Image (cartoon, rainbow over all chains, first blue to last red; front, side):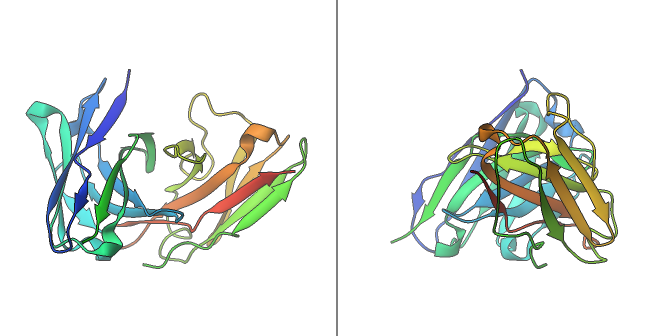
Amino acid sequence: EVQLVESGGRLVQPGGSLRLSCAASGFTLSVYDMHWVRQAAGKGLEWVSTIGSAGDTYYAASASRFTISREDAKNSLFLQMNNLRAGDTAVYYCARDREGGMDVWGQGTTVTVSS
Amino acid sequence: QSALTQPASVSGSPGQSITISCTGTSSDVGAYKYVSWYQQHPGKAPKFMIYEVSNRPSGVSDRFYGSKSGNTASLTISGLREEDEADYYCCSYTSSNTWVFGGGTRLTVL
């Protein structure tokens, strides 16, 4: 079964750092473009970052403090988030790209930035 | 990059058809075929409904139809069912090599 499972979300103080993980199963993550998308409570979806199959990376303007990466040996995707702010509080989803759409989504991991 | 513009809410009765619009610019919706649509029920992850403007993934009902004209994409749902009640989001690739979502539309089945 094709599946994505996120982890790493937790309560963190403003200015802190967090590394989110997304473990893929049922497919080889490195051959696909992969995305991070977030959703604040009661709000809409917001694209955060993409890593291409060639390793090229792209970020939303709001994600300048973030770094997307992957580890092929672990078949996993990561999002390193630094200098976190209250506005980064959201559920973070990883998603697989298929022909310009996001066809497989994880269940999400919750990041809360608060003192 | 500003969010694509969607109506905040739409409604319809069972069996009816509704259309949700998604308006962008000549730098996103109008420029690329990479427009997709997602359905999200409360507390759930988004579900992939339409890709490349009008293509349905395997398993998605043919009651869901996507189209585009100029800078506006549309999702039409025919034969409305109670289970269609959800939030719907459009998404487009942009000329800045980024992606942008619409603000989302709450569909109510009366």
